Amino acid sequence: MNEENSAATSESDKMRGGNQKAAALLALLDKTGYNMIQENGQRKFGGPPPGWEGPPPPRGCEVFVGKIPRNIYEDELVPLFERAGKIYELRLMMEFRRFIGVCISLDNCRLFIGAIPREKKKEEILKEMKRITEGVVDVIVCPDATDRTKNRGFAFVEYESHRAAAMARRRLLPGTFQLWGRAVQVDWACPEKEVDAETMRRVKVLYVRNLMISTTEDTIKAEFNKFKPRVVERVKKLRDYAFVHFYNREDAVAAMSIMNGKCIDGASIEVTLAKPVNKESTWKQHLNGHVSPCSENLMEFRSREDGHQKSVGKPASLSLSLNGQHSPSSPELEWYPYPFLPGVKLIPISMYSLKSSYFSSAVMRLDYFCYKNNWLPPEYYLYSTTSQDGKIHLVCKVLIPSIADGSQSCFMSHKLCTTLEDARELAARMALLHLDSCTPNSA
Picture 1 (tube, rainbow, N blue to C red):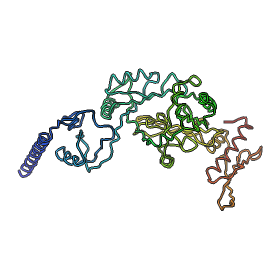
Picture 2: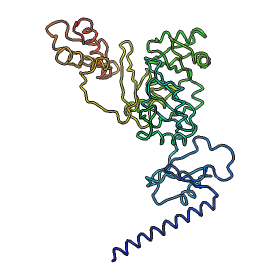
Picture 3: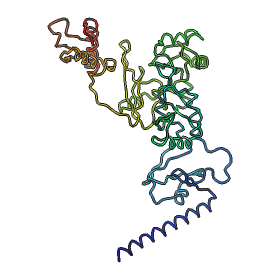
Picture 4: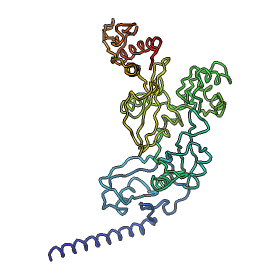
């Protein structure tokens, strides 16, 4: 009987508390004159407030508040945040709340859409996204690097507001919607870090995308020098995009206006000013596994709309699968990150089942070469010397045991290095140059 009375009392307290909270919310609405509606799992207070004239506040005026206690509602939140200024709109999610935490809202207006049929054109994707979602401004579609008639299987959709993008994301979540008869992958595109106007006014490098894989740096330099001879300092091309460095900013700006939309080797190019990045922070990100260097100066510039390194280049919550290729004529490594879509099936394989083109390191390629020829693994021997300034320099000798009784089996670089990795890499390159030229059973 006591347990029944206790349960009844507890239920009565809940009802009384609920009535008090409802009364407090009604009092808030009467006092402020704001409206309150509930939709899609969130309750919206205001937006716009009474007497508001003109457009909504610009981007950057919204903050995200997390970890709110479950028993705190608008009647307590509104007076708290009004201390900082007039509230245009407050949206309260009706689930998952605890200790409070405040940070600037990203105000992201761009979605990543994956698993799109590769034969779909930009116009078709734009039309379909406008049909099924509201507030679409534009779509960014990257053509395939080897077949310009196809896309890369993903697109980025720009919306007029963060709210429009959030509503579209909710509608397109996997398992609830299909595009062209197939389930699509949907996530936020990583927001692009803005570069201040003063820095951008000093930029004299152009980012050029949609190039053919076969287009050379010399061809690009020649094309950009056509409108004014000898204005291009150098060109750095990486796969299907490039950075064109000019001696003067004025020539860079003029070339951007003239060359945007022009054809090089049959491909219509897009040209924008490159955005500088912080080299130190980029390298730290690389060490943490988030991004990899793709130019001689650790991604000296990040593109404005690059599908590899820019904000649109990967969805916010997807990891990167990195695949590098190394060119013997270029000492730097070139990396190309691709989105690792949720639900993708991973199959364990042996590295020796891959082709040699999958290895960017000469050390790995030499190991692969020996394995494919049924040879014993290469053996590395390290040597050092001290320079005049007291620094230790290193050099490696690599021995191929399986050919020790035949042709040359030891290889050593003619250059000293400051790291063990570089010393091993140079020794492996020397071995590969010799083995590739004299071994008929080359892997």
